[in-house]
Every structure is written in structure tokens, then in C-alpha cells.
Image (cartoon, rainbow, N blue to C red; front, side, top):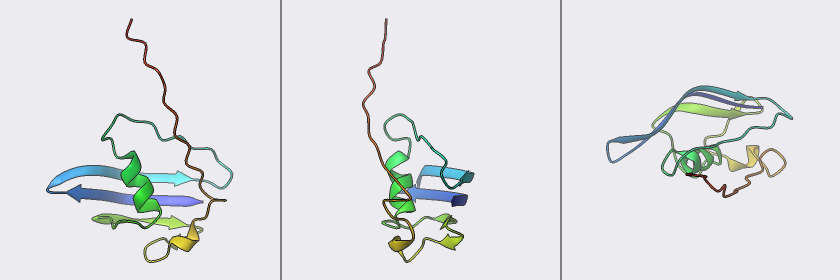
Length: 89
């Protein structure tokens, strides 16, 4: 299980990510979709403890991920990137 509460990230005074609350239960599939600059990569970097949040926290298996990337393994998280064509007609 992954739980997020009041998570935000600010770069140079600009809020690039704001997630008030999110819970991803064990064995649940979850898709993260958004435009360029929407915060998808920032969320994954926070999830993997590669960067620090300005506010809030992320817990995996009921433990804070801050300070240890070992709580989330490839068994817990699979990142799949797919380009989807857009039909403008």
C-alpha cells in the first residue's frame, strides 16, 4: 500500500505538484496521466525518495519513505511509459 497526504513540491516559487490525498492499495493498478509539466515525473521522484517534498509525506507499507528508497521495490512499483497519439481531427 502507498499512502500520500498533503504532498507538494515547489521549484523557484512555482508549485509543480500538489496531492492532498491519495491511497494506492496493495495489488491495485494505478495510472498516472497528464500533460507535459503536470508533475508525473516529480511524483515518481518523490515516491522513490530521489527528491524532497516541500510539504506532506508518502508512506509505503505504513512507513515513511523519506530517508530510505528500499521500502519501495520493483515489486511494488512498475513504471510504464507509453506515447498515445492524439487525434486532432
